[in-house]
Image (cartoon, rainbow, N blue to C red; front, side, top):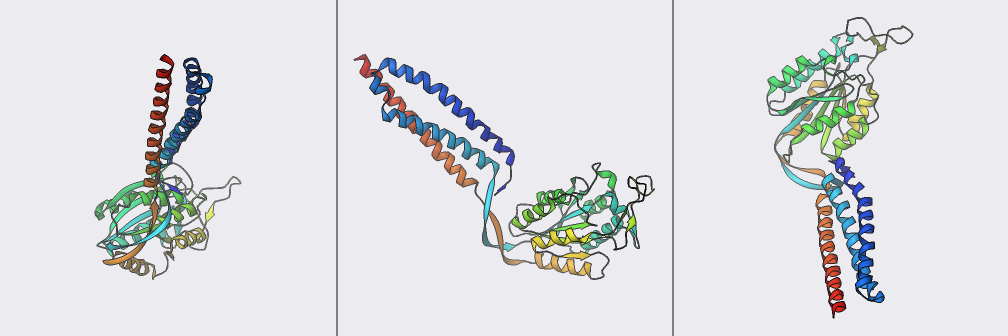
Length: 333
């Protein structure tokens, strides 16, 4: 099950509170009925049934509304839609290792060059841009304004985000948030990184991307030969023992993330990388019809349950009220 707004699950904490309130209301009500009616009538099965149904309906209403507001979805369904363009989310790794100098310069600079070439070769696509380090930040929402993306690429650096590390999972999740709700749009996430993610949620984020119809294409930067990582002051970063930290490209996770969604991994150093990704852009962005798989929204199901529970609660209250009124009238006679 996927929840779009899991914060609403906190409403489930009202369930024990409701049980306590029901218990506190039931005891004085039973005493009052015992005082007004004969002891046998005070404990009729009809009153007990109304009370049980009312309590169950109240609990079901709270639980159903909580789940409905949380936005649950599960299961997959296929439908044919009209293709109407392409949306590409660029996820740029700005961790300190991306500043490392390889044979062609810094990895971050090379990623910026490749991202600009991709935009130039996909004139009909919309782009968004996310930078990721120890956390993710959306620099540019989905737009057709290439100048905005170009400026963001020039601005991108490790200093944008203070949290250390590499959390590609948060970058993928942020990229998903930039896609529009327009049906039929091709959705591609391009991850530009040297790998080395230390957070295990990256694979879970890739699975979420697949469920939402997005395909990940990962581009790896850096060579197989380890190089030093320059610090903020230009001197190489060192380990606790004083030795310089040296890193090479770690493509294993990048390959895995792309594979989860049916996408591909490419090495930025290979001459065919640009054309291969542009070809994928062309396929995803072409007009016509296509069959897409979507995770089914189950919110209406829980809303229906909440409505039935509300009706059941009203019916139980009306039954209990009518029964109480008849007993009072019988006693007064």
